[in-house]
Image 1 (tube, each protein chain N blue to C red):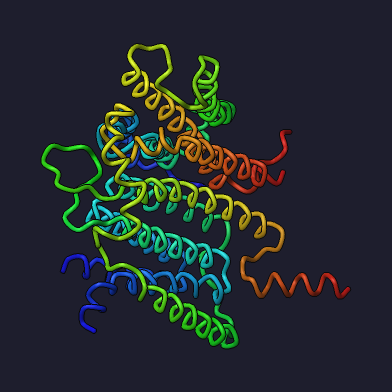
Image 2 (tube, helix red, strand yellow; image 1 turned 90 degrees about the vertical axis):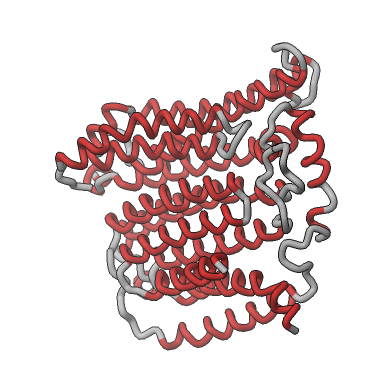
Amino acid sequence: MIELILGKYNYWIYITLMMIGFYAMISKNNLIKKIIGMNIFQTAVFLFYISIGKVSGGTAPIVWDGAVRYENPLPHVLILTAIVVSVSTTAVAFALIIRINRAYGTIEEDRILEINRQGTGE
Amino acid sequence: MIDLVMLFLLVVCALVAIHIKDLLGSAVLLSAYSLIMAVVWTRLNAVDVAFTEASVGAGITTVLLIAAISRTARGEELMPRARHVLPGFVIIVVTAAVLIWGTLDMPDFADPNAPANLHVAPRYIEHSAEETGVINMVTAVLASYRGYDTLGETTVIFTAGLGVILLLRGRKR
Amino acid sequence: MNMRVSIIRRVVSRIMIPFMQLFGLYVIMHGDSGPGGGFQGGVILGASIILYALSYGLDSARQRIAEKTSDILSSTGVFIYAAVGLVCMLIGGKYLQYNVLPIGEPHFASHIGILIIEIGVGITVAAVMITIFFETARKDERVEK
């Protein structure tokens, strides 16, 4: 049991982080809060990937004479790409939120749905 | 030990960032979260990734977040949200349970013999320097072995820029 | 964003911006031998312009780097990247096979090829970050008119 916890507790903390972000995405009313949750979720997934590439006793994947073992460079490459894509999606999301705010005057999901309902009811 | 402290700080930052009502405070906490994340990645020896997170996550994202808040609303409205809380909570508990169940079959943290470290990576580690003439393996894989990925990704950034221009730039007068 | 231009902010950013840009260029050019590369360097270059805009105001920053310039630069980087691939193909290699480039021995050619595409990535990332910031931080009135 102790071995199981020692070997896996990192993953469990990452899952906690993911769930915090996930909760903000599904339960928060404010659109900007949802994006903050999305960022937390994304970063937790990245952390999970990076930790898969961790090798005990490894050094940073830059060729060096004294190195015994290197970390796995592949997850690093994938996540490097993913971080830049995540800032792109965040930027587009903010652009959409600014447009929504201009059209509806609010960024609360409930209000927006209410306004939409009134619009179709009339 | 320091790793555990860092991970604990991450959880605290994330929780407070989604809990407080002042969005500007959330933005600052998200920035702190990113910066701590960069430190954690440095501890995991992912230096390139940590560098990117420190400049992109803690820098640009925060600036964009603050700019977006300044153009919309600073505070989160207090609304009767009891009906949101319970289903959301149930969903995350179930998802977390499934994910934790999934980790039970995974190799332990930092296991050198994990399948993820045995297939393509050794080839990159042994031959990338002589094949590409670049000693940083991450750059070698990024630009040479997986050059198509990076081209696609640069296009994604370009497309994001285009999308923002189309959404926010007014018509020329 | 309507900001008062404070003297402290102006002086400190004037001192910092050249070093930030120098560091950004250093990071782009040394992505092959240390942590860094096109993305990080591009973001730092973009951040230096954003700092300028934050301390001197958006209009003043737009005089330094025009809307048109950053728009053109953001597509130039992608073009450089794709063009390197095409040149490799025209010479007889595969798409993005840098070691066929006619710049000396394959080892060196590959190194140079990687450097060129890193520069392309850096240009695009810097220009797009600047564009995104300016569009997000712009005053509403100007757009809605």
